[in-house]
Image (tube, rainbow, N blue to C red; front, side, top):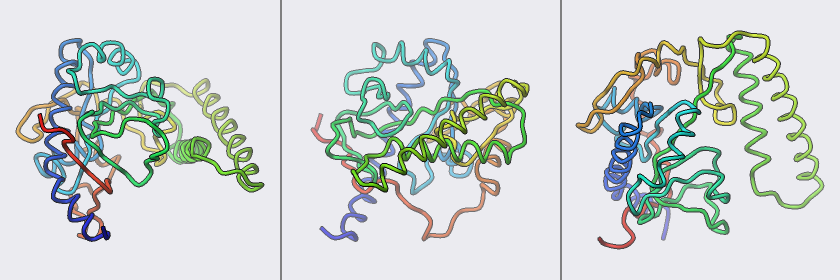
Length: 270
């Protein structure tokens, strides 16, 4: 199976992947509406809603955001509320998973990314990403970018599979020290600077140093995505400019990349 054949196979399965992810999002929305949990379309999903009225044509995932407090509430109720076949995956209940975020996974599918590890037995079905948001201190954006980039990079390296060598041993201690130092500085900034104006992803998920004004997120609005209505930030334009700047510019064909290297939207016919 050559790369061209595999890419064609993935592209043919893309729409089925998107529709299954949309069905997962609808279940998340149902649970959140029932329990009064706030969330909003985030990242490329919000961009798709604004620019394409649905999925970005080459996108193969769904991103949503919610406050860390609301995520904890969602984690408490979702296992009992989600239908059979959907699994709330977190680093705590599926320790082999490679990312420090929650996902709602479809168990009757297979979605493989370049970083997936087949030696680890975590669930690998289609998913919706849930990014937890926290308050940020009101400090200059370059400071935030420097610290979050360092924290995100060092965390990622520390939680990547390592092979025994003198170099890997030295790198482990270097990035462990960097992570501890940057977290210490961040903690000091949180004590000294006021909060309440900005929020963003937790530090390990914010390698680009993004900050959103809270009044661009709350009170939540709604937006149409794939013909259905979902929660959105209060000011999608400001929110997307924080993420992508000129977000209405469609990238050239060579930059329209599907994340997955293999998608099997349905393992067993229902």
